[in-house]
Image 1 (cartoon, helix red, strand yellow):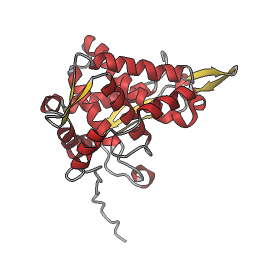
Image 2 (cartoon, rainbow, N blue to C red):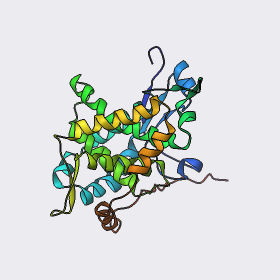
Image 3 (tube, rainbow, N blue to C red):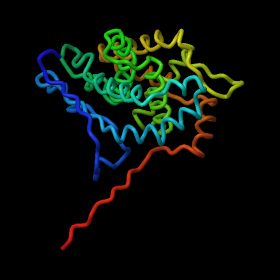
Image 4 (spheres, rainbow, N blue to C red):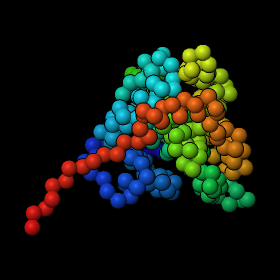
Length: 264
């Protein structure tokens, strides 16, 4: 949105309490969520670098190694993951904000209802991957396209473990299966791992982005439900690999803080 503020900050978290530790250790956010505020003022993106690094080291890299082949694992870089996360947060404030429903202008969230959060998170994920091509062409992002794919896939696998009760688990399992359907993600039964077909992945990413943006742009709750109903499941071959990973790879990291007690 031209003329509005879009600050981006990188910080190290030194302490979290209360709701910030209630569910999982978030590594980034874009706030506020109200599109009326975006329109008038913009939105702020913040990435907690130390938490992003810790999640990657403790969870994502071991999980990627358990599920994907050696070639994909070799693509993974710290900056590729970081830049994809940043693109995800930027992606939240791109795309349609309001739609017309029955002659009334409503927010996309109001139009999609309970399906909004997973569709919106998927839109942010996939627009980040798509926009990487443009950013690389402009010389802004020096990381390879493959490094961004590895970052996204590692985060998708982490979320899939949370199951369909999580909006992230719901949409990232749907994205995974969509990419499998497009033959961009392929299971190699002989190797017992997944690999990425780079001749198909960029087009599959574009197709998925168009699908999710169309759902939002049309405020089509029925299409959102149909997409999630069709694609949000865990195939047996992936579940078997996740079950094996569960024996050695943590689901999440939990930071412990050394807080000095105040003297009386």
